[in-house]
Every structure is written in structure tokens, then in C-alpha cells.
Image 1 (tube, rainbow, N blue to C red):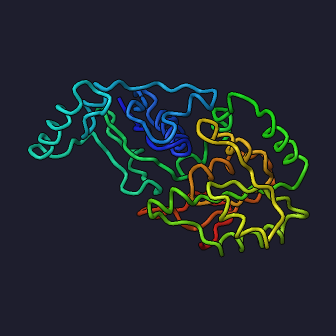
Image 2: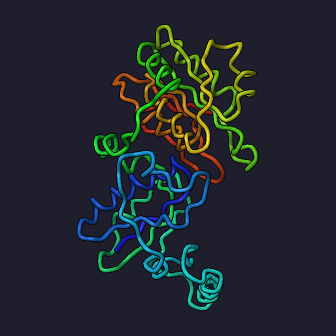
Image 3: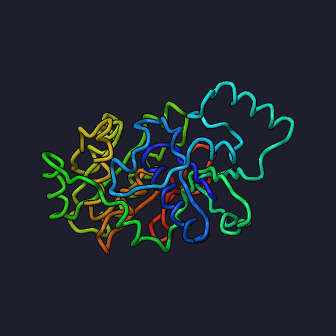
Length: 293
């Protein structure tokens, strides 16, 4: 048995789902399950609400047997969590709990596991190298359950008719958590690249900090600021991003997937050469334009 831990918001969960599918391919004789019972970030577990897919899930007992940490959804969590901490002090870490030190790095070791044992794989696995050969499958799996309506439908129609360029700016959460933010200069240089390669670009800006965007972009470009997709509808921003013909992304897994799922064969995707926090690799495919930030 192999259990893949799911954590974080939608962009992270999509990487974890893609990684789980890859693990199933590598170990076809193993039962591969997702651990989702503990997710509480932002909107919680979103994958099956947003996309037309399903995931086989581990129960808390299966997780408790393999993980170093007693699952928060398990019975008598406070008691058994304390006992599991004591057990780690006495016995050390379980061999079965394999954790990424860098959620953006590529770990080839996970493709060389001893198939006689069971494992709990703990990470985000946010590196495009894991999924380079799975694009067709993932495009099918990450099919949004419901179509756009109202204002979103109108914007998506415009995007398809124009040389539309998505610009994603992620700031508020990053600033409050002291995470690395893509710089003003990165966006200026990315826009210069688009202007040099795309005739008559039309820009659509997605952000959690509208005042910042107005200050940065108002003198650089004419643009439409996409607003209104909040809370449980925040994924609609990603859905809209996929209609754009080109993308300037932030250092964000949400940003990555908005660009990845775009269907324009000639799309230009520009990404910042940075991750966030202690991570080391950009959220980008190797064939995208990666520039310093």
C-alpha cells in the first residue's frame, strides 16, 4: 500500500493528484490511496468539487499505521497524538513515512521504492518533471465540472476572440507569511517579452491585491481586472486563466495550473525563477520562459 498525503489549497492538491497518478503507473500492483481527511486550508478538499474526477481515499487507521503523525481526523486524536510523539522519541521515525524536504524539487527515489513495504508519501510534489509524460491524461482529468456563466462567461468569450494574456499576481497571503513575492521588475520584463512576441495583446489581471495591481500596471498597459470570484468560487479564476492564449504567472501552484491547462498550441508562458519560502525550484515547465525576479 502507498498513501499520498494531500495538503494545501487547490493548486497543491492538483500536483498531489498528478503525483498519485504517476505513483500508480510506477507501482501498478500496489494499492495507492489519498489521505485527505485532515485538510482544512482555505476551502478544504476541493478536487472532486471542482473537477470531474474521483480519488480512492485512505482511512485514518491506514494513515496511522504508516505515518509518523497520528491523523488529526482519527479517534481520540489528542491522546494518541501525544502517544505517537512519545513513540517517536523512543523508537525514532517510521521507515514508511517519506517526506520531501523541498516541495518544489524532483525526488527520483520515490520511483525506486521496495515493493514489499508500504509507504506514506508526504509532500506537495510540485515539480513538472513528475508529470511531463502525463499531459493528455491530466487535461482530461482536470476538466471543470461546471461551465462558466454570467460575467465569467462573457470574459471567457472575449479571451477566445483576442490575443488574451493572463497576468497573475499573488501577494496578500505571501506578504503576511513573509514568503517571496514576484517583483515589480519581473512583471515589467514579462510584459516587454509579450509585447515583442504577441501582436495586439489584451491583458487580464487576476490578483488578491487589486490596489497593488492598479498602482503597478496602470501606466504600463490597458487591462481588465478580473474580480468577484471569491471563497468557494475562487477556482473560477483558474478556469478563466485557461481561456487566455498566453500567461504571465506568479510563483504559485494555482498560477502554474492556470497556464498548464491552457489549450493554445502556440502559447507563451512566462514564469518567475523563484519558488516561495524555503523552496528552491520555480513552479514552471522547462519549455516555458523563466526569468529572474
